[in-house]
Length: 476
Ligand SMILES: NC(=O)C1=CN([C@@H]2O[C@H](COP(=O)(O)OP(=O)(O)OC[C@H]3O[C@@H](n4cnc5c(N)ncnc54)[C@H](O)[C@@H]3O)[C@@H](O)[C@H]2O)[C@H](O)CC1
Ligand SMILES: [K+]
Image (cartoon, rainbow, N blue to C red):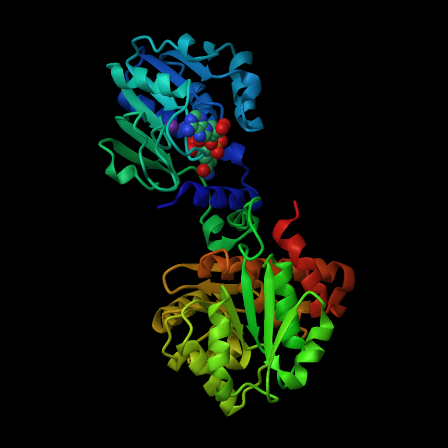
């Protein structure tokens, strides 16, 4: 089942894989025409009622396959206001080919007539809320008529995010929906057919640029609304926590704090004036710091735990107690990964091991990425957490759903790129579900690496990735 916004991600991924939306619209339209033939006889009167979006576009395609019927095509609105080029091109094709088309300026101009079958292609996955005019009047006319009503994708007035049906929605007899079913369709007193429109499985399996659509920023948001990340790192190393923190800022987090031993705090601060560094005494993390850190962590949306902490016994036992007291989302990387299989925590963990670390955690891997994907899924299910296993093909799984990210290059084997990934994941997990945050972070980190390699070849370094993260997430 796919919501409207998930469908938009899949659709954009299909486009990234070379299957443009106009091709999908052609398939959709063809499947609508097949459904019309299933429910009407040659010579019957068929009225197509098309809205100005791509839902309407599907029905404008269908019209070209319906020559055996007495056909009328009504567009709700002026052709100039059709919202997409592909839908408008299909409208123009109907004009050139002399199909019987009408435009409905406002609701008083709408006439349904007395057709045998009406195609409801007013609104699809692009809408929310009750129907506005002239769609509302057209829906009422369809509902009052004796015509068989066939809805395209969803009955107009069904909210494709929530599955709620507006009071003035179209009461469909049949629905032909595309690619996968949508929320709300199962509860309708209508027959629902799912049409395969040629979206490759890869559009869902692979993380592609369409996944970036999950990120949206409220223009009215305030400092903090887009994420506060706490990086718990440093001690034996200082660069790793700074890289993770800077990457989190570049991935859109509002505030990023680093909690680090006082022996290295100034050095970490010295890498960037954009960071806020909070220090604890000593030269590495130890159980005595956990009370203070647990309180600090509770004020953040996500925790990034591990970069540069080292693997001393007392550090690892502090990591374990900190996780036991945290109930938000924590990205766990590097040495901290060792504690994950045994930790008791309410937190949602996103673990970011490379394959060696995965094996160290008790997981299994394989050179074949398909096999590896299955092994990672099983291990994620075992530990009940989300895994992002790094490799040429990154595997992301929450134990039920598994994605693959193919971006990145061999130049990224340089030190520090994993810290960047952990930071980006921490930032994205402030605003997305863990599995989506991990998938998009893997994609963005690899894409940043691909940008960096263009300029620096195999001499790229982790700070190059940090600078390239915004382009990977937001550039056109
Ligand atoms: N892979 C796919 O998902 C494919 C989907 N196809 C079809 O495209 C539609 C979705 O198209 P989109 O243009 O995004 O949106 P809509 O056609 O649903 O309508 C948007 C249109 O409606 C206006 N609007 C919004 N809310 C309301 C309201 N409450 N009342 C009236 N009007 C409203 C808004 O302003 C827009 O102008 C999908 O359902 C499929 O049918 C592709 O053709 C194939 C691939
Ligand atoms: K519809």
